[in-house]
Amino acid sequence: MTFGESIKTCFSKYAAFEGRASRSEYWWFFLFTFLVSLATGMVSETLSGLFSLGVLLPSLAVGARRLHDVNKSGWFLLLWFIPLIGWIVLLFWAVQEGKEPNRYSGSESAA
Image (cartoon, rainbow, N blue to C red):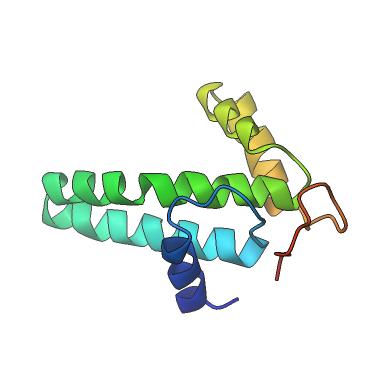
């Protein structure tokens, strides 16, 4: 999946928590949100805050779909609230290859 396809997919599945997201989809969208947040932060803190608020739901959705790809529940995103340990666990899962088949394999599969 390319950078543009990833952004298009994540925004078209704005609040879709079901299905799966490939590593490329997740990491390209992560890069997009990081770069745009950085750029908008240089222009205005208010603009950066509005952008962050606007991509919060699609970021959570792609994160849940990424966890589904490694056969984990999207609820594991709550590990983000456990400093350091939770972050390391989520990072470990985010970089793993998708597991095929798994309980989240439906009509959609990871690309």
